[in-house]
Image (tube, rainbow over all chains, first blue to last red; front, side, top):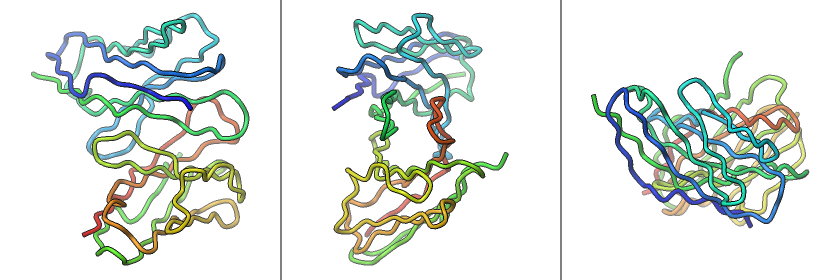
Length: 116
Length: 114
């Protein structure tokens, strides 16, 4: 079974600075997807960024980018120019690309605090 | 487009009582998911529907949890009887069939069992 590990329960960053959240995963599959979700106090899970395992190029979405190291099974999220609105729980998630169940397997999350 | 709607937003019940949660997915989304998120943990899939059919319910405690999706649209998740350890946020999500881009979550129902 696939597992996702987020080793940083909490992180903090100064407004306008850069922070990196770590994620490692374990799988025997070669084709899969990786996601970072943001969960503010409203509880809704919001997709931040997505990476297909077959793509070597790291995904980027505005201030958010990932460092995907397939051999090391590592998938970190970098937030540049941090804003107060970035404060939330961040979850790393894995999803198989095979048929059948399309469940997301989540890590335990990292609570990000942004200091003004 | 309208998002995934869930109700109620909060629910407090006593142990051994029953409770039901409702989810209305995004129009046209064939796939619907129910996740359980216990405090301090990431969400865990309880059940996945494809239209009316169940694709994955391997982690659903079937002795007390049940779910249905009539007519392939709305879904209801029920717990009967509830236990203290069922206290959690119950998230519903939906996606287009076999959509690899990820799916859209609702805001969840926070259940407290006392």
